[in-house]
Length: 282
Image 1 (cartoon, rainbow, N blue to C red):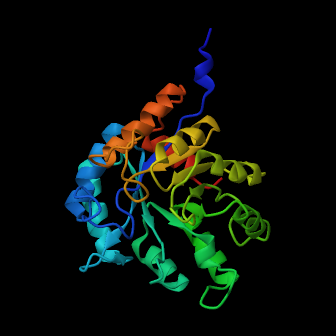
Image 2 (image 1 turned 30 degrees about the vertical axis):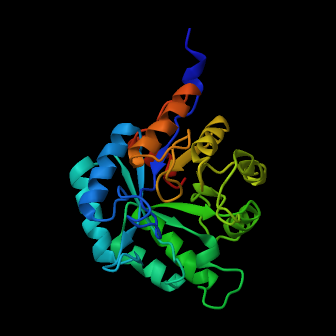
């Protein structure tokens, strides 16, 4: 007789080790250089991560979409972990980049995976945004290149717009992996697991999804996602603290805490091959 737990879907744990804004003044173990990112990637892979969400910085430490900086970081990470991690780059604007610049970076870099925010590429206020045809061509190109997209949604009502964009062919039907962001626009940037429920209710088409959560309840939000068959992203980009409130020594400790949550729920951890399979457009 097979174990009932055999039917539980594997959970993808991703790590977001630095983000666009934090510095070593926030935490001395925040990885910024290619060598630091490579060491972090290796430790997080050992702790259970299947994907790394990568940001790079300019010479002044600011957010950057510089292609050569990305290439240096990716090369260092690949040398450290081989193919044991999906390497996902961010296209985040952070108020510095226009949609055309974001898409141009991805076209030049041809990364394995990329995160994209529909509200940045196609803002409700079209001034400064890209037109739908331009974005549709770019997203179709991702499929042609085999690049794995993940779409970042900051509020539950953004799911309705995402579904509309798919219905109208702007977003290809097979591109479905979402990231639900909790706590980004709260006053304290502290999230609660209950904030996940409106996203889940709005996900009427059953898109596969992960969660990232700002603040000290990051692990609790990750475990809440796992109970609902979702996936989770943790790391210094959104949170510096362990579940008990203590300062995490490094990103791997946050991955390990989430992995323990998955084990308590009897959900196996996906490896990078499983993550690639789930993220692939279909």
